[in-house]
Image 1 (cartoon, helix red, strand yellow):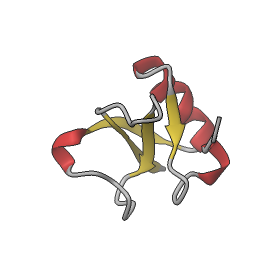
Image 2 (cartoon, one colour; image 1 turned 90 degrees about the horizontal axis):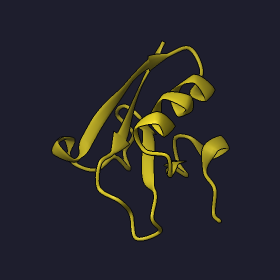
Image 3 (tube, one colour; image 1 turned 60 degrees about the horizontal axis):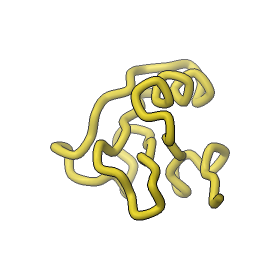
Image 4 (cartoon, helix red, strand yellow; image 1 turned 135 degrees about the horizontal axis):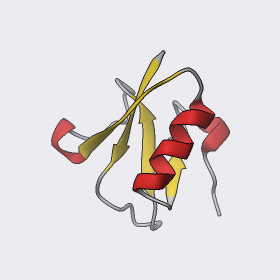
Length: 69
């Protein structure tokens, strides 16, 4: 299982970035909220979108969920 976190501060783009815990692009720990541990990134995103509907993936650690639009 992999642990996921979400940035609690909204980015300039209007989204909240989701990261694999430990990603080098993660903001400081006090700006992160644990999403949980999941077997797949799809499960993690379902959970993250319940917390922050505008969740977006980190371009480095979750490029399959990174949306430029």
